[in-house]
Image (cartoon, rainbow, N blue to C red; front, top):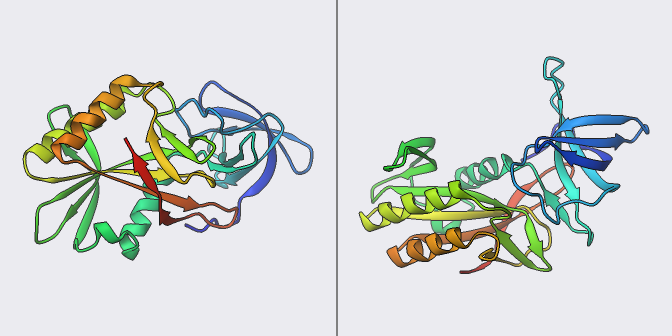
Length: 233
């Protein structure tokens, strides 16, 4: 995924009201921008740390600029725009870059399914059973260990219940962790943060739900899903 034009650099001053951040841009001016992240963003940024933002160039938007990348307290790079995760996975699917998800002729986004009024991120279809693919963005890390979720996620537990039912019915159900953190080498479940999510994942794994984790390569010019990383429940 290329950024055209490339992301611009600034310094993040604060994040507030969940969807806003104040930054200082290169010219020394202050700017309020959109922060597209509903999570806690724990360990994702540091006050006065370097950040990068995109410009929609749409004067009709109340906040035309969007926070994209931040520097963590220990100097790693994190992609804080969670909406990029699905786009990265879709790009990788189209390129056949995920070995374990090849062989499907088509994929559709946001398809309704399940008993709890859900929408699957991607429905992959081919000659065999359908594959239901749910994507989660991982940004919280402790050293080289990525953790999900970074806050209590009732929505995440709901998706796991839906995937579990699909797997029990014979469909292929996949939970895909898109790691937007430059130092993460494996992904773990943040059971201390959300034990209900952890329990739901245990049931999903027992039912045959597959778990995959891939790390993205992050930069001001481009981000791309690059390589698999380990997972431990």
